[in-house]
Length: 248
Image (cartoon, rainbow, N blue to C red; front, top):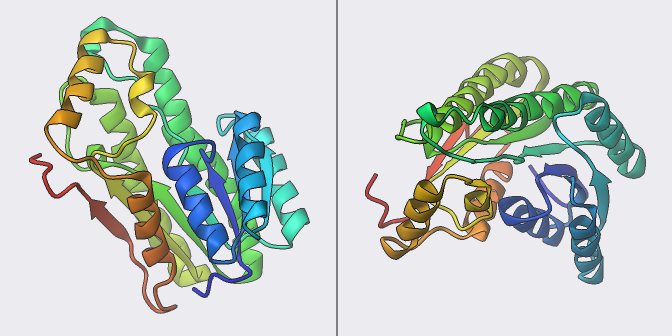
């Protein structure tokens, strides 16, 4: 896909991989819809992008609210005339042992990581079908391929993202020229650890930083650009991206 002049929706754009990808896209001439709940951060990022000569629209969006998602997608399409790219990146990782029964965290993870992604996909698909093409990028994880103690619900959510992405690709790529890419990162510097309320696992995850060099959010953004810019006949369906020193 030639990126210049395209329109992209980025969920979870207020920090980390979402913000890094929005910056990379804007630098390539993409008009970016910045979607998240923290509107102050979105406004700051939009100002940064505009100052660099790009175009950006902050969109207050809770991906767990289908009405808010539909309204945000409609606002982006109205502002820029199309939706060519959707990056479903919003996610949470409040890990803990299952026997801790932190069921509120379980449900919140599934609501954001799985249902939120589905809500956004449902909102952008009609636009892409009408346009005759598009590209949907979903953030899964190494946890969408493997299972780890303490991450059972998170792994379940990311396995669901991986399965949904492949099913979506099989359905919409041949029928509507909509490519689907599932990004599966390993250890990445982000705010995900801040969601961990279990002190034991919070400490364990922080200690990982002493064991390997984590990927940067920009590394994932560059991987996404690679998938987006593949020739029209190429669908980079899955990308498994790990730190070189990650042993698992």
